[in-house]
Figure 1 (cartoon, rainbow, N blue to C red):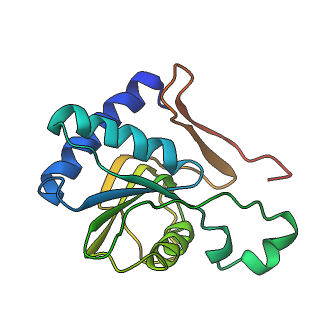
Figure 2 (figure 1 turned 60 degrees about the vertical axis):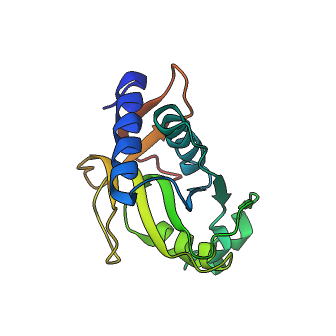
Length: 175
């Protein structure tokens, strides 16, 4: 569906959109949802550095314990670090993820983010919006919209290399 060049173009466009809609970089921070959103947040911040010559602080958040299915997933739960090295109180924070589907990961991300403080505003940016919402959540910035049929998943790799891609594939039996 998308190759490395396509993902690079989307990230550049998203950086410009974020700058335009948030009206600059003062008190603007990014938080990538582990794992897929972290490299995308870093790449968008790097694009903004090229455009504005200003560094946007980038943090990461692990939402595993904030999921509404955390209790049932605990035996297989894998935790990663959450790192937000700037005070988010009063800031515009862009929560960034690779794919938006049901909205449950975003809800968990907002809950986790609020444990770090009270941002002025939380924006949501996603590389791919695949629809299928179960909660009333919509992205402020979406790189692309994709219709993914039932029984299929959208896999995204967007770390910045030649192997970056977004692929729709049949869901495996064990997933």
